[in-house]
Image (tube, rainbow, N blue to C red; front, top):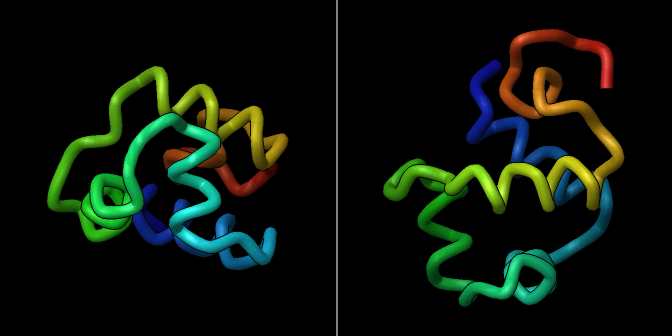
Length: 68
């Protein structure tokens, strides 16, 4: 599983909208949607915030392991 799919799955599992996650990251919903589509690379500072938000390791988020 690639990180783009896992990013969307984690958001949906947390019952959050793209706008809610974008607000937590301090970015726009449009930019966050571009991350989820893979149109833009996810900056490392956003990766860290998303891992903290979902309480998962970066390895899990990036699809390098299956243990959150």
